[in-house]
Image 1 (cartoon, rainbow, N blue to C red):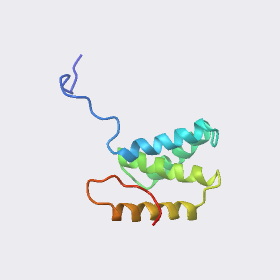
Image 2: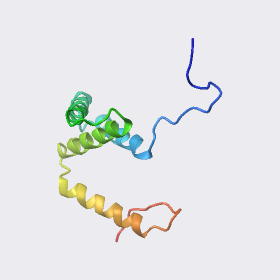
Image 3: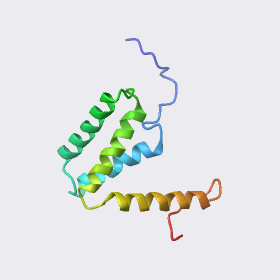
Length: 111
């Protein structure tokens, strides 16, 4: 059997970016906690992937995880987290990383 990859090379990471793992972990947490059904998550993700394909988005990891993030945002709206709450949290994280010195962990706290 021919393998195009070097079998002696270290394995590639499962996720290209930390947020890729985080978005799927958050979705799994919502399912495990019973906030959404796995079938509903699958449908939301599938719908976003179909929308991306209809827009002509390339079949890449970025497209997939972007669709997953949008589906996660949709899922959170279904459990009572609205767009204003998401925007407030996004702004808090932005403020936190802007005030964090390079190389230090970003901590979300009181501004």
